[in-house]
Length: 305
Ligand code: GLN
Image 1: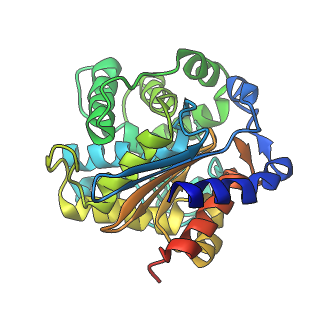
Image 2: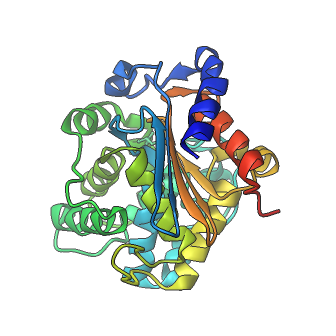
């Protein structure tokens, strides 16, 4: 397996030059574009990894899967989906347009920024800090890694420049999708995006979902099976932004990407996969990461379609 992973990384290395590191969050622009890493965590407890799999990066939009789990645990699915829809958008992840043109006004799904900000507003706790602490505790449990932390530089960089997200949040407050203090809600969202992980951590999130909500190492059931299935379904329909349809055809695995360069994938009942390579395609997905998953899917026959 290790040889296969090395081979697939080398085969896809040329793609790096065709992509660009995200720079709209200034601190992300400093990533080294030449890196590629991959990790597979399987249901037998094996970890296979290759390339720059130890490199730390911020989780970004991959965090939307875990915040959605916590919001559903806190409020029930019915309440959450009264505020956030279940449909793909066909638009960019940070688009604002459909908030106004589709009525009643609510974000179309929890994997776009507007939806994830609405989800963050539903997490329970005394104040934004304690809400985020509960979320971080859930990340640590699912990744089986107590050391997970926020990268302060990325968090502050996004907080000081994230005006598009601020606009989405204020619009949603105006139309009654979110309530309460907007900056506190955004703070939870910016911090969750800035949690620092490596390929092993995100492979473990994939494994947790592949295992339908049970942490493999401890046997602890953290979320209902139905919640894990809901998250995987969103990954198929919306996980790769407006490239989700094409990704389903080419790769056929539930996956969620982030602009930090990570892609987390869950192969039901088989394995979790984490890939990382910070150069992105024009839709904001890791360009070499996509290639690696495409080859892995073919070589290991992972597509479930
Ligand atoms: N923090 C990023 C943002 O809000 C997350 C986006 C992403 O990974 N697609 O813009």
